Length: 223
Image (cartoon, rainbow, N blue to C red; front, side):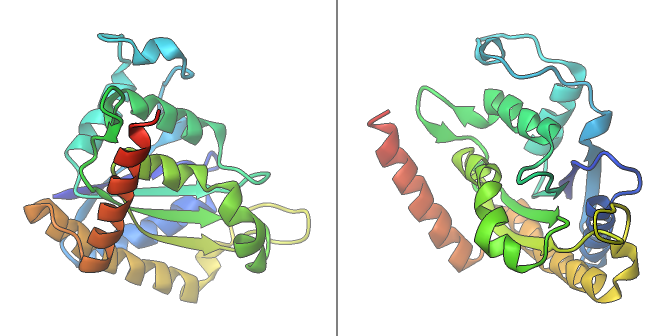
C-alpha cells in the first residue's frame, strides 16, 4: 500500500518538497509508504483537446502518473504558490489527468473517493491564505474533487522567504512546522490505509464526498 506524492517545486531543494518529506516520514511511521514524483522531471506535453480523443497517444510519463495514481491509496500534492497560483506544470498535469480521471460522457469522476492532501508554501504571511491565496488556488482541489477524489486536508506554510524580496529554503529550520506536517502525515496515512483496505473514509469525509458527488450528478444533467 502506498500514497502517490507529487512534488511541484522546481528548486532543489525546495520548501514544498521539504514539507513533503516530513509528511512522508509521518506516513512511514504508520506503515504507509510513498511513491514520490517530481513533476519537473516528467516529460509531459501541454494539454490540448486532442488528449481527450479516444485512443489518444499517451507519453511514458503520463502513463507512469496514471498507473501510479490508479494503484494508490491516497494522493499528496506539495507545491509552492507563485504569483497567486501554482506552477504551470502542476496545472498542466491536472488537465492531462482529466483524460483518465474523468468520465466525461457520464459527468462523474473515476477516482472513487481517493483521499488527497495539499501541502502549500508561499512567501505571504498567514492571513493572506484565508483572504487571498486560498481562493486563488481553489481550482486545484476543485478539479481533484471533480475527478472523484476527497479533500482530506491542507497545510499552508507562510513566509517561506529568508528575507524581504529574497527566496530560498527556510522550512528546514522550522522544527514546529515540520512536526505538525509529520503529524498530518501520520493522520493521513491512517485515512489512506483504511481507504486502501476497503474503500471507506472517515464519516465526516464520507458525508462531504457523498454530498459533492450528488451535486456533481445533478449539475451533470444540465451540462
